[in-house]
Length: 137
View 1 (cartoon, one colour):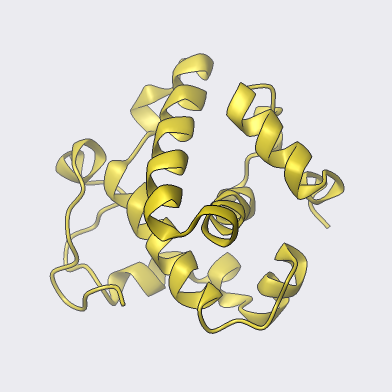
View 2: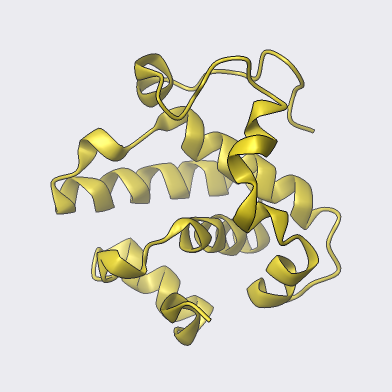
C-alpha cells in the first residue's frame, strides 16, 4: 500500500491544496486519487479546474513547473471521470481494485485517444490538446 493511502481523502486533498503534501507521496496513483476525489466531490468540469490550478500551484511551489502538462492533467481527469461513471466503488482503494489498469497501463490507455505522445509534447504541456483518435466520453 502506498503511503498517500494512509491519509484520509480530506487530509490528502487539504495537503495537496495547501502545498504541504510530501512530494515523495505524489506518485502516479496519487495523481489518480486527486482526480478521483475531485471528480466524485465536485463533478468533472470543476475537477478539471481544481486539479489544474492546484497542480500548477504545487509544481510551482516545488520549482518544477517544467513537469506540468496541461493535456495530461485534463486527460487524466477525463479518464478518471469515465471510469467513475462505470464504478460502483465509494472509496479510492476500491476504485483502483475495480480498474487496476489505471495504475499499471495508463499511458497505453492514452495512446488509444492520441496519435501524439502527449507526455513529451511541448505543445501538450502548454495547452490542452483534444484527442485526435477517440474522444473522451
